[in-house]
View 1 (cartoon, rainbow, N blue to C red):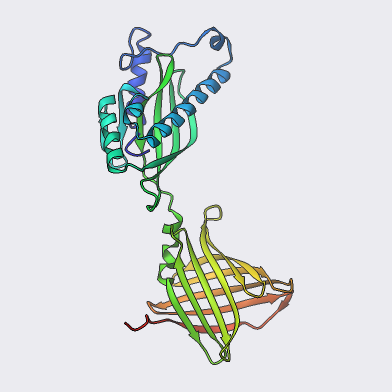
View 2 (tube, rainbow, N blue to C red):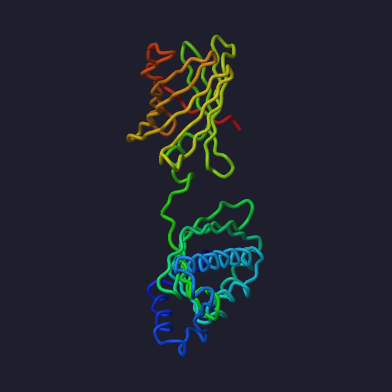
Length: 322
């Protein structure tokens, strides 16, 4: 969460001290939550189900207060001596300080918006729970979202669950944009002008840079033969670059990309316009800033092997004259 979230050890020590000393000693002046008769008579699992529901509700309340720009409401969700720690390690303690931190965020980013995804909630004793999740913050509509894993230590006090600490953690999961940066060199217009055909291809980012979009045109003897589009993206499940291509004749295909140095090997499978299953292996090689090659081998169409396509040189199209 943005500038939110103590190390678990410090928070656990804080809460454990209060619980260990009994009802007379409390954290931040609050007393441990006491279960009612019905809760006491229920199984521990059932009690935790109720507590987990309350903690998830607290997370929703936090997000709503953040999206409403209500720093005071956010601070009230913490114990009096609650603590927040930013991803950079900057620590703020106490409700007043927490309120000031969030008030500063809302002043600087009045349209900031947060989405919280609670991943897990673990209970350590009857009065301590640890929540792990992912916060996604968008400061403005035209800015990319920022993802941040977080950890919150909750304390069961005064009949409800309050946050004893909240800590932002570095996001070690690369974004689709970061994964696709290895193909950033392709952005622009390219031309393959061979004796047989003229192929013009362009690559560009989508607005949020989660995909690369490609368009191609093929001419033979000065006449249009085929056009098509391709979308290249990151598959977070397979953890590979994946692409989808569609041609103007009704054929389509899908590719899985693997990098070997300056070579990108794409295993393609697809269907031709007449319904035949096709497969091939494409290899794109970056030769220099403005040159690459492309070749296709292992071509099978409708169960029959077809000739490979030899390496084709491709050159970046120069910008138009000023």
